[in-house]
Amino acid sequence: MTQQIRTGRQAPDLALTDHEGQQVRLSELRDHKVIVYFYPKAFTPGCTSEACDFRDSLASLQHLGYTVLGVSGDDLETLSRFAEEYHLPYRLLSDPDGQAARAWGAWGEKTVNGETRTGPLRSTFVIEQDGTVSSAEYNVQAEGHVKSLRERLGA
Image (cartoon, rainbow, N blue to C red):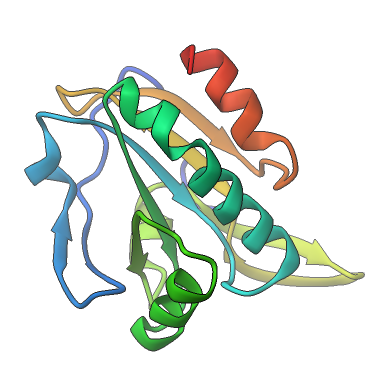
């Protein structure tokens, strides 16, 4: 596993392309609070559930000033289909080589259905307007995670 980000530290910058082909840089969102969540793979049950939970919670998170960014290793075409099929109104970013996941400490070994593999780990970060990480959660469960996050943020 890569080195995890600690709260109170500056978040690594992201420079990735979203599902609509637009470049996204976290440093350009400094006037916003941002939630960045890494997920393993679009269209899988857990990732779909988590993405839809963020979708369904987006209004309350935006009311508190948060922008939501989802990051996976999926290609842009897959992310575009995922966003369209599930009506995901926030940006999905493609990290095909896992470089961003590694920089954020969201990369490591995981066991799925008895098989151990290395890849992106379901992780969520809350970034304040000054770029500092106020919350870093690794290996979160897809079910109930967004609800718990909303409660902690007061949304």
